[in-house]
Length: 379
Image (tube, rainbow, N blue to C red; front, top):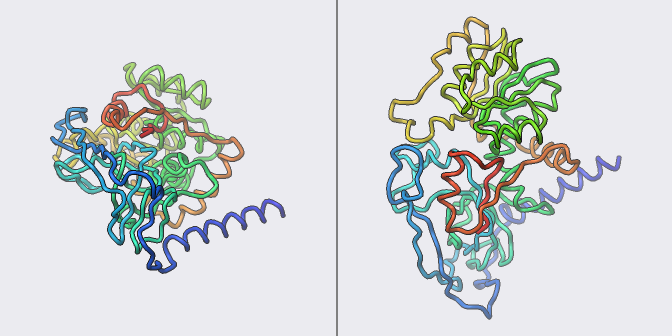
């Protein structure tokens, strides 16, 4: 009874929060400023795209632009936000190409990133107030002037650490992992052998933990000793180091019985090696293809699954997904992740980088290795 009452209370609070921000009509109020006695002009630092990467993203592909921003004069419908934290996601690299599924960034445009920040001032038509914490596509900038609808439907949940909204409870991270493991194809079950690629990253490490909770045998694929030690020692699963060579041999040693479920965030060679080892009625969930994100997309050079006929031979299924097409699953997934987090049954390791100046270097590290879990920039 107590747990049901607590859950009901939480749902009521969440519903009230959404209603206050998105459903109730705005009131005509004067411009509101967090610190009326403070300076009206601040220095805005913004990373812009100066050249489209021809391969892996390089810090020289972006330039840090500095300008003055008047925080005392927001337009009627806009907010001025001081960015506190930025989160990095692998798909952001794809947005730097001229053609991008998630929307291409124009040259001289702001590098994309989801962020959490504090409202400094709000226009007369805004439902937000100075001091409110907000989350959305803020971009790689320490201050941003934005219309709330441009941030996307990503509110910061009340009563929880804001960083959770960029990681474990983020649509692009924890919720993607939850939907991919439980909602796209028949989920793993006790006795299954599950492989997760990009397993030490933000999405992959959550997927590993969720798969482990089903009672399945879980093998994580990642690159380098740091990431593989994390998988073995902290997450308690088997690990394959694709950078060590003989990927197929490593899989054979750890999964001689074959593979029943594959959550793929890497694509390329890893996908082919897994397909060669699937069992009958295996399920392959395509979440992403980080190995192909550095310039291969939309130009005809993606390394695809050359072993796709194994799906027919083993009467198996491969299905891709975008979490936005599974929004009906998100509320339940979020409640489950909140419960698991609150009871210390799941975690998302955070790798922090200090300063907006380090944002492009953090993007480089996201693909070059050495950083585990969710990469966050403390602006």
